[in-house]
Amino acid sequence: MRRLALIPALLLAFAAPAFAQPYETPQELLEAFYEPYFSGDFPEFEADFRSDALNALYDADAENTPEGEIGALDFDPYIDGQDFDLADLEIGTPDEADGKATVDVSFTNFGEPRHITYDLVYEKGGWRIDDLTSNDDDFSYRLTEIFAEAAARWQ
Image 1 (cartoon, rainbow, N blue to C red):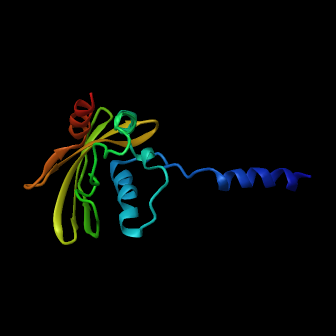
Image 2: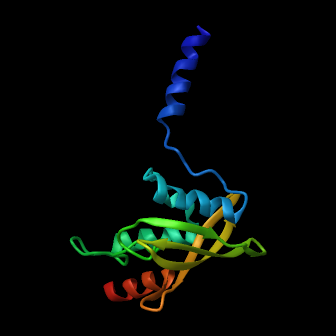
């Protein structure tokens, strides 16, 4: 009888979506976030890595973008490109204060150097991505500003 009771519990455990664990350090979060770019095993729920505020921007963009149109992002802001062949990932030492952190990340994408600065927030028991900035000479951007510009276009 006890074995029969365990079967549904095990099935639910394996069938439940794999949510990102709470990351205790900014480095753990960013290492886990970038790992799929090397393994090809992308999580179903990328939103688990993002703060509530950043997820709200993604949701608002999806809701407000007219059908058939491209939303605010026509590239992957986390790699500063559309396609990827990442190497040489380096996660800098975070500058932490009051539940917020800034972390520099550098890597190459198709051999081209990339540098992204992350703004992280400690939320729901772990670190989450709240914003990011790329200071590429050809195309610099701040993720939250891209969403704000798109929102203004659709209004």
